[in-house]
Image (cartoon, rainbow over all chains, first blue to last red; front, side):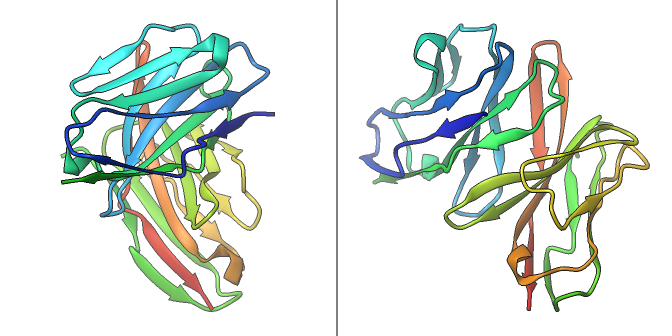
Length: 116
Length: 114
């Protein structure tokens, strides 16, 4: 059975610090997708990234970066030089099956507070 | 403007009164999905659709129905709502371009079942 664990329920950092959000997943499939989403205080959901299980390259998008390590079943998300606008709840998710014909399971989320 | 719309945004109803939450996207996406969000339980997928007339159960499909008669619309139907279906509901659509995927979410529908 698939499972996503975000052990950090809540994190607070001071603006401009780097912060890493952890995501550990469980799956029996060799082919799967991993996702990260952001939910700011306004409540909308924002898709951040999808990573295929065959692609272990790290991804960088501006101040955001993702570290995918199959050996530890982790897909961690780092925000560099955090800003107040990064304050949100962040969800990690997993979808088994390589062509997205399977359901998606979410972690419980990490609430990130960026303090000015 | 690329968008996913949901209606209504807020709804208060009573147990047993059938309701439909509409979801529409203007991007010709094949994949659409419904989620519910509850305090302490996080986000859970209800149903998803890979294309027209192709739907499948997510993690928590009980008490819900969906249909996908045309690509742009993916309504969520509660035939006999119960208080445990009080929740915040999100619709989403997505497309793949090679190895990349982009997803768009609707603004959410807050449902209260009395």
